[in-house]
Amino acid sequence: MMSSTSELRDITGAKITTKFISVPGNELIANIRRTIMTRPTEFDLIDYVYVVNDRNQLEGVASLKEILQATDETEVRHMMKRNPVTVDFHTDQERMIYLVLKHGLKAMPVIDEHNCLKGIVPYDTILNIFHHEFREDILRSGGILHHIKEIEELTTPASKLVRARLPSLALGLLGGLLAAYIVSNFEQVIGSYIVLAAFIPVMVYLSDAVGTQSQTLIVRMIALEPEFSIRKYLTRELKIGGLLGIIFAALLFAAATLGWGSLILGLVIGSAMFLSILFQAFLATFLSTRLAKLNIDPALASGPLTTIISDITSLTMYFAIASALLFYFQ
Image: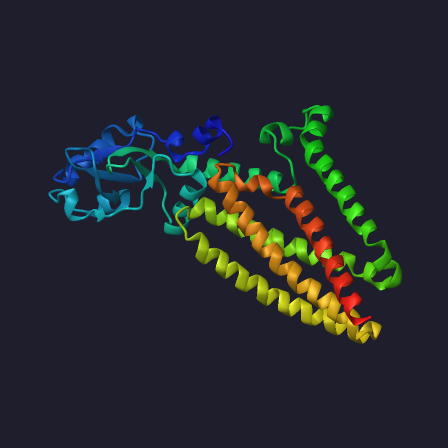
């Protein structure tokens, strides 16, 4: 989504072959079998026979197994499966992979807005795309945005690998410095209630974890179901975040109250945990949907960037709530 080159590379239509078997609905099975047996090298795939009308619109599909089992005088339209699973020419290849796995297909027909058959994505290409997407997601989650082959090649110079990993780490450094600045501004609160510092790791970790989970799920949803209702999804994610917040807030409240013998500390930790988890679930989902609307790949917000945003907002909320509640109860 970042650029026109990336868009062309990632759409399903860029991966099609036009070397497949397509026949009219009244074609006899005997003729189809003869074509398969006498001209197999002309086609990139023979797993399916696609049935089209005189305008090249896709009407159905029959598998090779069905073709071999049918009688010679049967017309293919009488045994084809109607309304086959298809994708649009501009469908993201990740969604295409999802549909292939969901329906157990060996190839994917690609159509245009008029249901005209433009080509087929064969099985070996589908496997290559799946492998590429998996490797890309792994690298991206670690904040490495670079050519996959160069990253995995042992002969790639260390200097190039450093340049690939440095930007996200430098961003993390800036985020860490900002987080340190935020904590230092609450030095008086920490000084009067030093135990607050002991809970920073658990606050940051749980907030990061919830935000990362929410962002991973929404990025997948955007890729696989682009027409989903953002409002309904966001509402559901807020419910999930609220329930998770209540659970962990209650656990931390009990731990702080019983372990440190302070009801006020338990209230501070529990309240901050609940609000932080709820906010991170909202932020990760909302930010990803906004990026998608701006034609920016929401997956780019994953990894270090999400962690930085989560850390800064979690710490700010934690100490702000602590300051307010401690001031109120003292």
